[in-house]
Image (cartoon, rainbow, N blue to C red; front, side):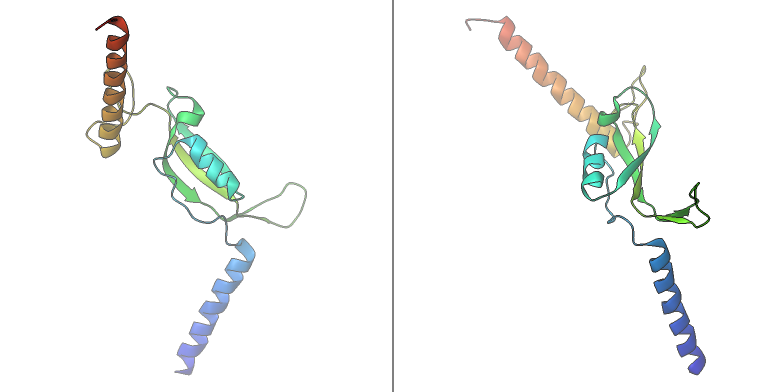
Length: 142
C-alpha cells in the first residue's frame, strides 16, 4: 500500500512540475472550418500567435480554410541565452488555400467529402442568386 501512495505522489508531483516548466498554453479551441482571418483574429484576441502551414494558392490567405488546428506548448532554444524558453502561445493552423471544392481544372476538397459538398452547394447557390439578379436587371418593365 505504501508503494502505491509513493507512486501516486510522484506522478502528481511530475505533472505539477511539467505544468510549471511548460506552462498551460493558449486556451484550447477548435478553429477547423473557419477562415484564416476569423481563426487568426480569435487566436490573437486570446493572446496567442497563429503559425501557419498552407496548401494551395487559389485563395488569398485570409480566405483559406483551416483544416486542422493544434495548441502547442514546448521548449525553444533562445539564441542569446543558455536556458530554454517556454513557448505556450502559438497555435499551429493547417490551411487549405486550394479552394472550396475540386473541379476538373482547380484543386480543392473532394465533393464526396462533407466539406466539399458544402462548398459546392454554397457556390451553386451563389451562382443561382447572381443569375437571378442578372435576369431581373436585364428584363426591365416586367
